[in-house]
Length: 298
Image (cartoon, rainbow, N blue to C red; front, top):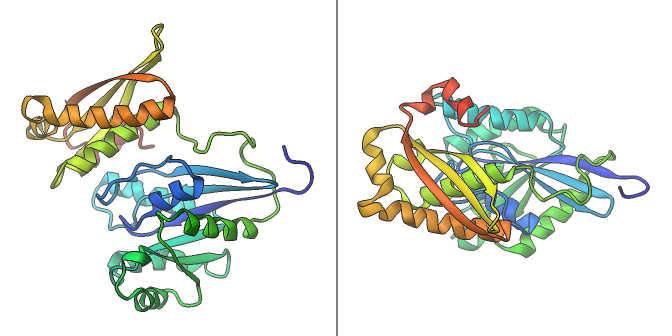
């Protein structure tokens, strides 16, 4: 542990779906710990990312996108956000400057209102490089919760991400580190990471409702004598007619998902990986609290 006074705190990344929270987290950490895809609601549970620099430690908390709860799954996701806000020292509220505020942005502002004046809140306008009128857009968002510090960034830009991270580091309260200095960047287990990577790659390729109706769970994760990891991940769908779509003609879709996920896992594990994907039907799992717990959403 670093000698002398230390500073630490929890920093929540919040916002509606698909505004770039996970992309920003990965950029601030310099390594990928959170799944990303063009689809909204890729993040379903809180993901913690740890950045330690000298005598300061940030525990970033990436949260699901805020949306209207419609089933047990979405209610779980909203609880993940409210739980993160209950233990936070700084909030980064991300918005998409390419578009004007929506009802979902208003929901975020409403949830943050009790924290205003209690903890620092940054309104972070993302995708500034792709926005036609970024200043006007940021002003429109600022009117939802007046008086916040505002910043404009591109979450994919490492310089932008580092500058924002440095500002947050300076705001941390005095306190002990939550994780050892040499702790890994994220708090997910390898088994959880493998399941999330498979789900990410599936979401990138599937259309319509299907990406949101799949869940993934690692059933086996073993380094074998030949130096290769054997990883079995089950992909659950809600309906029987979703199964052939996920598998694809002649197994093509499932092979594409597996090949892309295996490539990421081999980088992460620094070993060859044999990835065994099994597709199973779990009817209406998103509506069943017991099913959610069984699939790791607890």
